[in-house]
Length: 256
Image 1 (cartoon, rainbow, N blue to C red):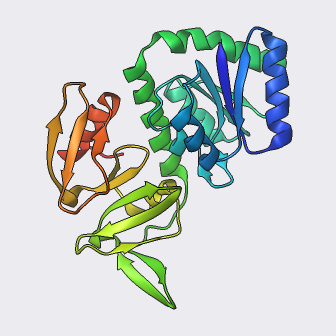
Image 2: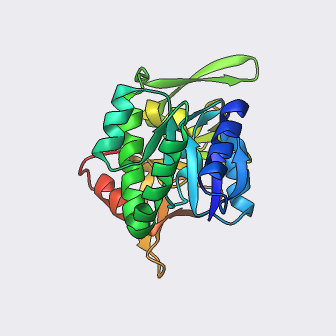
């Protein structure tokens, strides 16, 4: 079994790695990733592991930004947080508490077999559920505009004027309906919490305004292709696992 650890605290990561190896010496620790940037770069070039142990809060954002399109079992590692634990339990998501113990890690690894058998679409459903619940609990004031530093000025850009946000070369830019490009200086995860239900995180790179969507095409692979009213840098694709949730959101049934 190949395992990847996502944890930004070096001592904690080393402790978890040693505990996993102590629990099952046949497990290969394929990588220890300490940031969102490291994680995105790693999974763009390396094969996905069988299982991920992941902290949620990293120094440069939330691990959801890495995990968005992987659709493999994840065991979350968290400090005690009553809300988070209740959310994990309610959605069947496995977790281990910090500091780790041999018993808790061994139990989590045993549960992995059940996670591995439930299928990618169920893993995606669980992931989206815990992501939504976690982000709803993060207290971020709802803003109506983003303050953008542009040359020697600060520009207020109304959120409703933004067609999409895109992660490109580790930097997020936004594209307005009138074709202007700005750099908000925030991660997609931060923006996703700020902009409200009129935006959908279609994949790891794009956060799209419902009002920018012209049409949606079905592809042979059961993926969806989204056409927008502005010029995106590349094709905006939605995985088959996210397709159902996206279409419900697009039709106005609930929101993420």
